[in-house]
Structure formats: C-alpha cells, structure tokens
Amino acid sequence: MSANVYDILLERGFIEQTTHEAEIRELLGKEKVTFYIGFDATADSLTAGHFLTIMAMMHMQKAGHKPIALLGGGTTMIGDPSGKSDMRSMMTKEIIQHNADCFYKQFSRFIDFDNDNAIIANNADWLLDLNYVEFLREVGIHFSVNKMLTADCYKNRMEKGLTFFEFNYMLMQSYDFWKLNQLYGCTMQLGGNDQWSNIIGGVELIRKKEQKPAFGLTFKLLTTSEGIKMGKTMKGAVWLDPEKTSPYEFYQYWRNIEDVKVEECLGLLTFLPMDEVRRLGALEGAEINQAKEVLAYEITKIVHGEEEAAKAQEAARTLFAKGGHSDDIPTTFYEKVDLEEGKDILTLLVDTKLAPSRSEARRLVQQGGVSVNEEKITDITKVFYLNNMNSDGVLLIKKGKKGYHQIKSS
Image 1 (cartoon, rainbow, N blue to C red):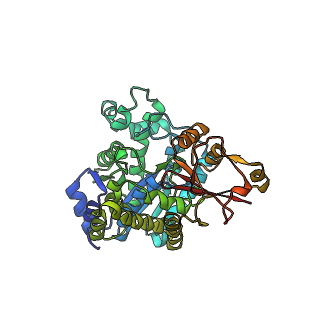
Image 2: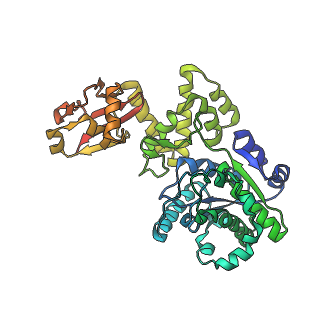
Image 3: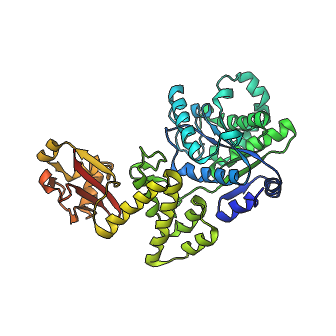
C-alpha cells in the first residue's frame, strides 16, 4: 500500500463527515478495502458534480483499494429526495438502462475495471424483483420512522409534502450497501455530503444484520461562495460528455470560476501536488488568472485528454489575447439563405443558447452585455446578414466578458 489515502483525501479537501474516523483511517492504511459509490442514472451523461466523487474513486484505486461503481437502475425508478424540493420525474426502464450504459462507458475513462480491479454493478439486479413483504421483514424492521424523519433529506421535504414512494429511498439505498457487502465484501460507502443520512442507514443495517463493521464517509459538495451547487451554467449542467458540453465550454467553465474557489478546486479536481496547489491558490490580482488557466487545463486533460485540453486552452487564449476566432469555440451554423434574409440579435442569442429566452436576451442587450465582432449592440431589433460577417466568414458574439459563440454559414 502507498501513503494512507485517508490523509491524501483529507489534505486535498474531500472529507466532510465520517462514521468512524479513527477506524476508517486505520483500515485504509493497512488493508485493501472494497468501497462503493452510487450513481442514479437520471441522464445519459455524468456531470461536473459527479466528477468530484470520480476523482475520489481514482485516488482510492491508486492507493490500492477496490471501487464499486453502483449504477442505480433500481433506485432511479424511485428518486432520491435529498436536496430536492420536488419529486423526481418518472423514467422508463429502457431510458434508465440506456443512461446506465452511458455512465459505464464514461467511468471506463477514469477507473480501471480490468482484472477485477474495480466492479460495475447495477442495483436493478436485486431491487426490481424484490418481494415487498419479505423486504419489510428483512429491512424495514431495522428503521425507526421517528429517526428517519429527523434526517435532512426528509426534513426539508416535510413542508411541501413527502410521498411514501420517496420515503422508501433510504431503505433501498441501505439495502444496496448490505447487498454489496454480501456479494463483494464491500465495507465502505462513499458519497456526497447530501447522502449522509442514507449512508448511515446502510452502515447501521449491516452492523445490525451481519454483526460486522461497516463504514461511511462523505465528501464536500462543490458550491459557489453563495452556497449554490457548482457545475451549472445558463445552459444547464456542465456535462462530461463532449457532445453535450464541448471541451472548449468545459474548459471555459473552470477558467471562469470565482477567485475564492480556485485553490479548493485545484485540490479536489486535479492531481497537482498540494505544494503547487497552495502556490497557485495564493496568487492575487491579475495573477490568479494563471491559476485558473492551470485549473481549467488540468481538469479538461483528465476528462477529455491532453489534446482536447490543449486545443481548448489555445482557443481561449486566441479569443482573449487576439480577439480572433477558433474552430474550438462553440459554433452555430445557419443555412446561407437564412443569413441572406437576416437574423435579429435576440434570435441569435437564443439559438446559440447564450440566453435561455428572448426576454433574457433583451435584458442582456439593453444592459450593454452583448457585442458582435467587437461592436457593442444596444438595439434589440438589430438584424445581422451574411455581409455582416468578418473577413474570416464569422459573426463572433460575445456575452459579458467571457461568453463567446461564433456563427458560420453552412
């Protein structure tokens, strides 16, 4: 075994809560531990929010431990109420299975599944054919409703109304841990801090049913300085799938994060040594932009590979330094005839997703936040034609200081 991974995760800023801190640290330092993290298959790609837990899995595997990536083919059919103000929308089995297959492909970029070094499992295998009466007799008797209602994931929902449908989620996740313990000797569950109540449920179930040790550990959630979850843009989630969020957009997201978050993200989302993380995090003023470039490059390199990271960095530098354009900038193509007839600025902003609606596009223009080919646009009725394109055949739209999109004719 190499250095104790618990100390690495602690120093890099991952660890939020543990069920048995001293025992977990000792265990991770002396033997190979099989652990799991669950991923409900609610979309066809993992997000920037998942990336932090994937980084933790990579640290754990590098230190000699065995990850189980548990796909939530069964739990996705219920929906976790944690951190949600409304009930999750229902999805078909076929969509959930498709999403789970997409997750597996993405995991394989980060986790080594060869030679039984890691396991991919799907809780649909044991949850979908459960006998409900047997489940209640096996699992339900070990859960106090009074205690469950004090858990944050349920407490926050009590005012709006918590369905019995969702109330089962904690029991099902706890059952997953118990099942993985039986099947693979899994003794530890890791997850985001919003999973704390569910993780405790599984730890206690194994300890009661098997009279064996089980452990739980949660990671901090990536949030902005206002406490809003990171990984969201005007367009929605920041995806790991390059078809949904291009490597350039992915790079730009991290290049543009708040100054106060740079050191934290370098520790959590890159493999840079901590001395370098602290050096970069201490930069001030304009120099902090160097640290943001390093952060964006390193994260993009892990997710999309070195070549895509270099292309994204070059595209960003081209724009900011030279005001030029690059093939790696998000691009929308219009038919030549459409541009000959003309497109108004509000339509361009909505079509390029620089604004989610015409009303938001109108507000951006009126507040002076939009320019096209370096010219500020203040007229919301302004129309652009094919002959307005620059010498490179491009309409380069800029939103704010850092949002770029180019229009080309197809």
